[in-house]
Length: 233
Image 1 (tube, helix red, strand yellow):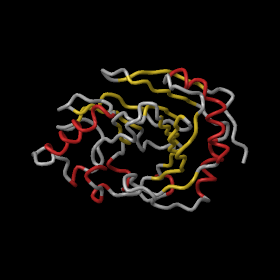
Image 2 (cartoon, rainbow, N blue to C red):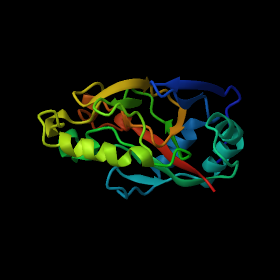
Image 3 (cartoon, rainbow, N blue to C red):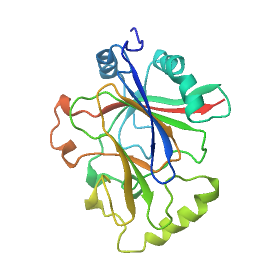
């Protein structure tokens, strides 16, 4: 499978929230996104994460190489990472399959993927229907929009205290997709076919999963992404 960059790739630098967190929004990323979709359909998927609400399968190594070849210089400069030596720790085709009433508590609130401020995450949208993009949040009690080592204990203690309060997300609330008593949505990236977004992994975020995602089991309703973690070597 030939995985190459699109001739009209578009790279936009954006910032969000009071902390002005950086995010890259890259449209028309790969030349043939349909080839990735076809490849994803042939893969063997497994549920290999206690937090991701669905199964995943390894994405092609050539895909990782394309990101580094095409976007590494921009990522190093824009996110001010301390070294140009980047590597992938995760790169998976990912599909959300967990019904809202089966989510664990930590899957019903925004999350962060790492305390490392230099760790990056990338989400590549490979679906055409309106199945939700990615939202970023502020924790109202602490005001935190990202979690690092210095904030970690304070944030966890605050969440534990809120677990006993009336505003803790209930099973019936399902996926978070907007403001709640505990969190405020500060930015929302739309899911555009063949768009990839890249952001710092310590930002509080969640997929913007629509309530009707599970109303239809047809193939066209599959929310396929490529989810990646990129680290400094």
